[in-house]
Image 1 (cartoon, rainbow, N blue to C red):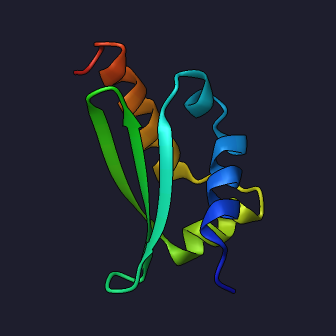
Image 2 (tube, one colour):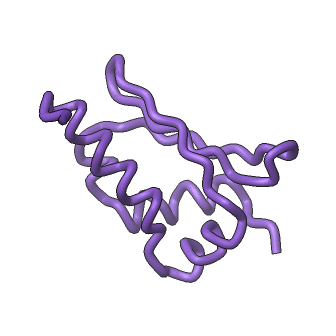
Image 3 (tube, helix red, strand yellow):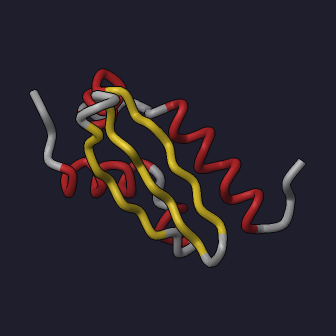
Length: 85
């Protein structure tokens, strides 16, 4: 089942509340060509685009962790805080 981009965005924010806390703007769109969701995270001059495969998006919607997205969010937070590797 294809999910609505707004409900997927809300689910991501509910699973990763630090996104809202650190003021990252989240945009979700479906890329027909790649058959994947593109999650675009922005904060100030930092930006991260993450491709979320449909099965991973399904897992997110079922309340399971979106592991790859979670890792990307953690990495983006480190960049914002000036703690990049």
